[in-house]
Each structure stands twice: as structure tokens, then as C-alpha cells.
Image 1: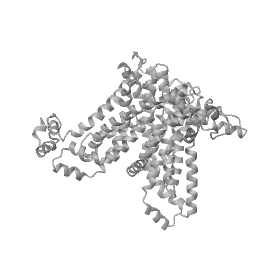
Image 2: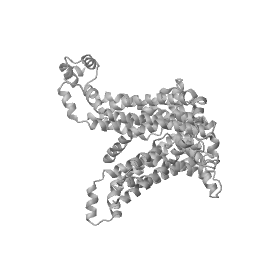
Image 3: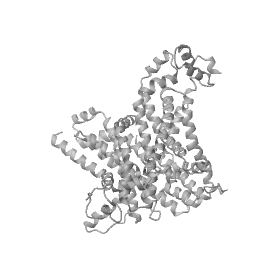
Image 4: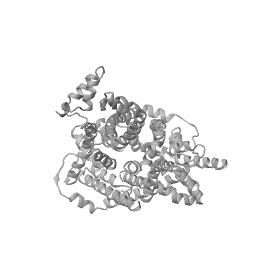
Length: 273
Length: 318
């Protein structure tokens, strides 16, 4: 391919990136403009950049509470999910017994299950236990919805660790659980970290389940908090944009960590598919 | 006590691990009744199975029961048989949300696939900065839904929104995107496509990169032009992953709550209300758990019909 054509392709690529990411760029840029400035049709770029929106969020809203709540929910479901998925993934990677295929199909059903179907009875159930506005139901639902993906991913990471290592450990007198804990888990650590970040991102970004269970302002996660803010002050674009910008900072940072795994994971899927 | 009699792996480990710091732990494994190499895999699955049972299977069964009762969030209410379903089959709301869910899912699959495929083909070419482009193009998919919706809501706002400012400078009248049914439906669908195409792009790009390069060289030697190479080598290799992606995307679109809810809350006057939003409105808005559950169950049935049809399609193509 000629050099000129390569640079042309880069130019096209950058233009597409700009168009595709335009709404995201808009949020970040507008967060430094006052609402009046955003609504005035004179200019698209900030005429006088200001941090006023961020000061407003810091002092007048409970954004940091929302962030903390999001952190608790996401971390809780990630840890629980990784623990469960690692055990199940180990079973699926190293054992050949009846029932494992059946479990695999069950995961497939979990993957496509309409959550609304579970949410109605779960809401009634946890309400009877007086657990609305409690993080536990949310963490449990997130963990469950994540299980298929985490289990499949961890299983494929475990599959990539040679079985010879297990055999050697067995000869040295290692129980299956011990060789799992001391050999397989440490070797799969990068994969576990990647799956963990995925699962954290999913829980951090999720809106629906949180909005059903976490109704009290002191318990809201970031998406629910911003949504309630949007309903109350639908035209306060400046503060909305600033809170949205802050909300996506953790997402973007974590995403940069896993984007490499994303491609290799998709390739593994492509080979199997 | 089978585990005491059989020389299982655990027993073996005990006899060899005289100096091991884990000896106590191993002993306690051995004493746990029923823990042997045979049922170890089942024990490993147990926590996951338990959670799936509590969080999805049990609610599913109770959901079926709720749909046969006229209940509220506070009490189950009287058994009414299939009344809730009969009511739904006679209501325009239900047919409208069925229609909107279908249009939403089909247009999302079609357009996110076409855009995703185009971009995957572009990113599969060798040019400087394509790694950056790939990462940057995934951002619409990875950011929280609420962030995208805040942004889009401003872009298409009636007053002061960018789209209407541009229309104004072009001398065109303002379009009230979110208060006219037709435009609201278009807006919800376009934003969903914008949130979905990166995933299509990612999986299709991955599939493109594992195609054996020598196939193209062989094709070129046989005198095929680039269009023929695309139709006879690239597309056939993408077939399986495309069908899997299409099925997943249909499922995810039908189950989508966030995009329409955050953007329009189903409005104006139910125009953008899909099946999930309808179920949500019945249950939490009208406190009618019976009808809400019935809609949710019909959604599952609808999904399963669609998935079966698409899988059958896959087999007939293959």
C-alpha cells in the first residue's frame, strides 16, 4: 500500500473517530461552560472556560456519595463474581463430568434472561426483608448477570494453562484445590484482573437494577443519582455535563487497562465461533 | 463415607504432605463428608448454581405465579387465571410496545452490523494510528448509558441543542425530537445504534484478523479482484460470528431498558415504550404486578421464538 494511501486512511479514521466520539467530547467540553453559555447559540466552543459547574457539584450535590455507593456496589459484585466464576471456571476447565454441559447451557439461559422478569419478584421479596435501599440485592443481581461472561472468560484462561502443571503437582502430592489455589490462580492472575475490571465496569455503568432497588438519595449509585438530577433540573446542562464527565473518568481509565484484553478475548471468541 | 475408603487425590496429598504448612487445611478437607475427587466439580459449581437459583430461577417461577394473579407490590391478590394475558392481547399498548421492540431490535441489528462491518474492514487495513482509532471507536460502547444520554439529550434539545442550532442557521425550522412520536422513535433507535456498533466492530474485526492470509494470496494468484475476494473469502468467514452477533444483539435490544427510559421514559404518549418499559410501567407505575409479570413473560417467549428462528436460519445457511 502506498504511503499516501496510508495517510489518507489515517485521516479518514480520525474523522470517523471524531464523529463517533462527538457526543462524548461534547460532554467534556460543555462541562467547562456555564449553562447560559451552552444554551446561547452563538458559539460551540467555550467562550470563557469555567470550573463553576464542578464547584457546584462538589458543594451542592451528593455526587461523592453516589461515587462511593457505585464503588461499593461494583467492588462487591466484582469480588463475589470473580470468586464464584473462578471456582466454576476451574471445574469446567479441569473436570469432565456429567452436569457441566448442563451448567454451560444454564449459563446461556442466564445470559439472555430478561432481567425485568426477575426484578419484579426480587423487588417484592427483598422488600419483605426490608432490604430496599440496601446494596446486597443489587450486588447479588449484578453478580448473577455477570456469571456467564466471567465464567466463560476465566474458563478459557484456565484452559490456556498447561495441564502438565496440574499433573506434576498431583505427583508431588497436591490436592486439586491446592494446585488450583497455588498454581493455576497465580498463573491466571492477568486474566482474572481483566475479567474483574470488566465486571467492575458493568456494575459501575449499570442503571436499571440500581434504579429499582436504590431509591433513597443517600444510597443512589452514580447513574441513578445523575438521572434523578436530570429529572429535577432538566435544563441545568452545565452541572449535568460536569457530573457526566466526572462519572465517565473511572470508566475510561479502567477501559484503557483492559482494551488489550478486549481484542484478544474477542479473537478467542472469533476462533471458536 | 466413600472418601475414607477410596485413595482419592486428597488422601494422597495428605500422605505426602508431612512437612506442608497446609497440613491442617488438608486434614479439614478430608474430614468434610462427601468431599472427594468425584464430586469436587459439583461442589465448585454449587455457589454459582445457588445464586442463579435464588436470583433467577426462583423469581422466574414466582413471576409465572404472579402473572396468574391480580396482585400489587404489597400482596399477591386473587387468582385470575389467564385474565392478565387476555387483557394484554386486547390492549393497543401491548401491540404497540411489541411493534416498537421489534423495530428497535431489527434496525439496531441491521445498522450496527453494517456500520460495525464497515469500520472493521477499515481497521483491518494497515495504516498508522489504527490502534488508536480502534480504542477510540469503542468509547461509545464503554461509557455509562447515563453519560451518553445526558450528551444526546442536549444535542437534540428543543432549545439550545446543537442539532436545532445547526438547523436554524440553515434556515430550517426547529425539530422537537423528543416530543414528536416519529422523531422520538428515530432518536431512541439512532442512539441505540450508536451505543451498539462498537461491539459489532470489535467482534467482526477480531474475526477478520483470524482469517488465514494465504487464502487471499491464493485468490489473487487465481486472478480474483478485491470485490471477489471480499464476497468469496471474507464474507463466508464472517458468517458464523455474524449470526451469533445478530442473535446476541436482538436479545440485548429487546431487553434494553436504559436507552428508551433515560431518553424519553417511553414517551411521548408511549411512542417509545418497548416491552420492558411497558412491564416496568405496569409494575412500578400502576402497581399492577400481574400484568407487569405477564408482559415480562411474554417478552421471554418472544425472545425465545426469535432466537429459535435465527438459529434455524443459521442451520439452513450452513
